[in-house]
Length: 282
Length: 237
Image (cartoon, rainbow over all chains, first blue to last red):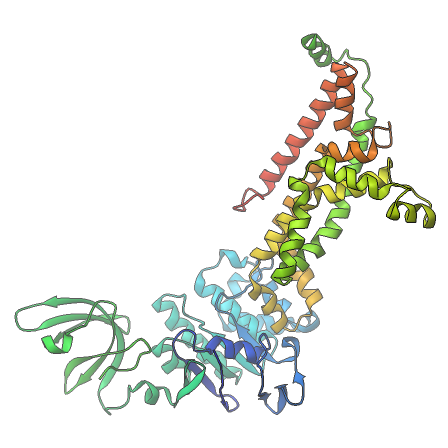
């Protein structure tokens, strides 16, 4: 697959990469981090050229000031939580920074633990903290919360949002999750087969703000009950189970597991089916 | 007759046993294992990242001692060590040493013979290390050497332990290669496994018993220790 993108990220901006599997999102992050070499093009971060095929510049990952949070966390199992963070220090100095970051992500009490004994959410916090220790200019997050349950996701979204504000970091986030992108990103780039097919504010790209004043929540169909007149669809949205009555034609083709948009318009809730990428099916 | 010997052995009234072959065996196994660690770790690291077309034939070559009759390996080594042929002659003329029927010759033979027992677990260990670990280390600004020493190597500990113990135990038990290239010169190349054969051939069943029992006990203890130390990891080797 050819990957061809032209993206500019403002300093301190948070950008989400969104799209189906195989669209090139992770490859793009790896190219930014220097773990994968683009065939041609340029990567310039804060005036510093990291990659330029024409000028023959290709900074190794060690010299790019990027913080990368891997999908599998990639914590070093032979080091404690604190050890993982201290490893990221240059020459082992600045231990105060390690303490400060541990506190900011709520890990102070776990600093002596081995990563293997931590829960998924805790591991994710360690991975985030470790990426921040070396003062990166840009933070790259590869589906950071995909392996976590809903409540842990919400908690960590708050942590990430507050950290990116505190450290004024530019952030590139790969995600499949609308809620996550709406919460964490100011801009979203939609990739398909290596090309940018949509770009803008998250609510514009997802169509969630199209109809003005109603409440709209992305959710998942849990069950559909058939009654004489209507279908009662149970939808899990925003951590709550909501029962919505729908006309048979509106619920037609809907199955448990389908992603839907729960919209509250004129005081009555309605459902809009979403496709695999989260775009409303008209 | 054997049972009488056993009784005398157990009562401790046997004539004093020549411990030379046992010390020689332990010395050979120790030197071989130390050399194997220094050779096998970089070799496995290289194989783990080598292109497939190089990795497959080289790995097959390393594993040859697993399937080859030891006499075949011994025969080729003997030819190579012989002062009448290319490599052996070169050694004789330049350094002035002859490897055939010598302890250094035995060490070289043992290293080749036990190489797969060291390389296979370590290579499996490298293959099982997620690539993201070293990548994470690079992104955190660490060089490949630092990454290797502080991230890869420490996480290979169970594999290294398995390789070390297996290579040591396997060297204790080798027979064919040693006999071919070392003969059975007392104090130089007559290791315990050969002493067993030698004593049986001379109908000294008591001494054969003693050497055999020592080899049995030492090998059992070594394997038991390995399984105990690696009891938490899913694959002992």
